[in-house]
Length: 203
Length: 329
Image (cartoon, rainbow over all chains, first blue to last red; front, top):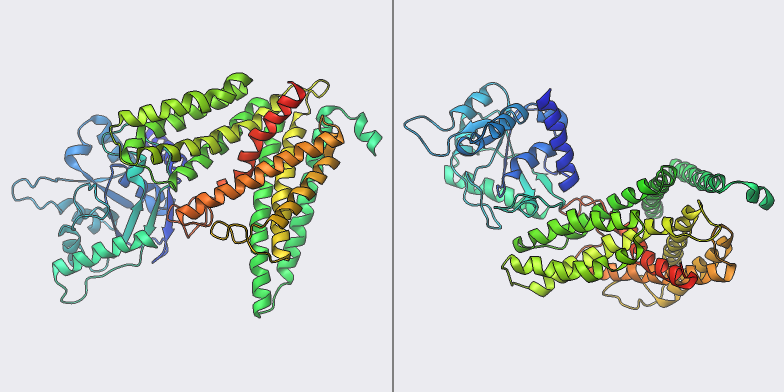
C-alpha cells in the first residue's frame, strides 16, 4: 500500500519535472520478455526509464541497481525493493560468485530487465564502452529481445552532487531490437550495441 | 438584446460570454468534423487539404483547452486563476529551458528561477502587490541570478548563459504573470467583470495572430526577415493588427474603456503580441527548431505550449502597464 502510494507520487513528480516521455521508434511497447539497455549518466536514469514504460510493462520489468549504493540506507533499500522491484548486483566482484547470477535468475523467471551496460555512470556526451554482461546474457537467453534505449537530458535535471532537481523535459527513445549474429565476436557485438544506443540520440 | 444583457449581473454577463464562446467552438468543431468525414479523394490537392484540416484541428484543440482553463479560472476565483497561470508559466519555462542548453554551473540559478522566483512572482500578483511585482524580476532577480551563477565557479560563456536564463524568466514568468494581474485591477464600477478584460486581451491578440497568418497565406509577399520567418511581411502584419484592433473597438462594451480607448488598447496589445511572437521565432530559429513542441521531431518531446502563449506573454505586460498608467489605477 505504502509502496503503491510512493510509486504513484514518484510518477507524478517525474512527469511534473521531466514529462517522462517515451518515444517508441524501432519497436512498439509490447509484453514480451526483453532486455532494455541504455546510456547511464545519472541516478535518475533508472527512475526515468521506469516511468517512461507503460503501466502494464512496468510491473514485469525489473531495473538493475548497484548493491553497494542502493542498500546504503533502509530508505534506499526499501524504495528499490518495494517500489522498483529492482535486482541488486555487486559492482565489486567478490570471490568466485558470478555478478550476473541475479540477472540470470530474473530472466529465468520470465521478467524483463533494464540494464546499463556501461556498468557505471559517465559524464561524457557518449556512453563509455559496454561491459561484457549484455553479450553474456544475450548468448544465454537467445529468446529474449534486446531493445536499445537512449535517455535524453536527465543529467541536466540533477547533475552529480546536486540535491534539488530542476524541471527539464526528458525522453527515452526506444530503438529497433538487436540480436547476436551467428559467430559474432563479443567485442564486435558490444560495439554494435553501443552504436545502436548512440544512434537513437539523433532520431 | 442589448437591454437584456445590461440587466444581467456582472457574474451572469461573464457566464453568458463563456456560453457564447463555448457555443461558437462547438459549432466550429462540428463543421470541422463533418469536413473531415467528407474528404476522401486521393490526389495531391485533397492530401494538402487534409493536412490543413489536421493543423486547424490542432489549433482548435488548443482553443478548447485555453477556453476551459479560462473558464475554470474565472469560475473558481482569482486565487485559483493566479495559480493556474502560474502552472502555465511553469510549463512554458520548462520548455524554454529544455531547448536552451544550460551547463552544470547554471543548476542553482535554475532552481532559484523555478522554485523561488516563479512562486514569489505569482504570490505578489495574487496579493495585488502591484508596485513590487512589476520591479521584482527586472530589478532584484536579474541582479541576483548572475550572483548565484558566478558562485558556481564556471565563467565559460557566462554572459550568454545568464542572458538566456533571464530572457526565459522575462518571457515565461514576468510576461505570463501579468495576465492574472488584470483580474485584480480595480476599475471604478467594473467590479466582478475583470474576466472580460482578460478575455479582451486574449481575444484581440489571438485574432491578430490568426488574421495575420491567413493574410500572409493569401498574398505572397517577400518576407521582411526571411532567415527568421518565411511568412512575416509588413502588409499582412498591418492587416492583422488593424482587423484585431477594430474587433477590439467593437468589444468596448465588455471592457471599462470607451470605443476609442478600446481600439487604442487593442492596438497596443496586438503590436506587442505580434512583435513578441516574431522575436520568439528568432529564438527558435537560433535553436534550429520550428516550434517549441513538434512532437516526434524534437528530441525532448516538449508540448509546444510556449508557441501558443508567447504572443500573450509579450502583450500582457505592455497592455497591463498602459491600462494602469492611462487610467491612473
